[in-house]
Image: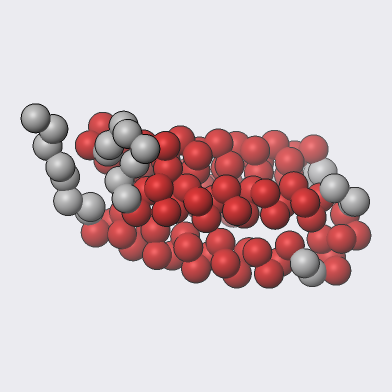
Length: 113
């Protein structure tokens, strides 16, 4: 029989802040400064923001795929920022600060969809 764990307060706080941040970031996708970067950049950024939003929902439900999707979007966002020479060390350090505690809760999360 599987043990069902209660969602930790840190994870609840992270998911609420992440959902709000993703919604605000989605507004940034339509800003004129993003359109000036390139033709495909708004579309790629929109996909990354939507993926981060979906990963927060997965983490809210204590699913492992939510954490995996979160790390995937973080690495893709960093890769995209490096390719466009717009790397922000604040964003990278925030992602690391948020991401490493998720690894503590990862074994207690559900494997199933």
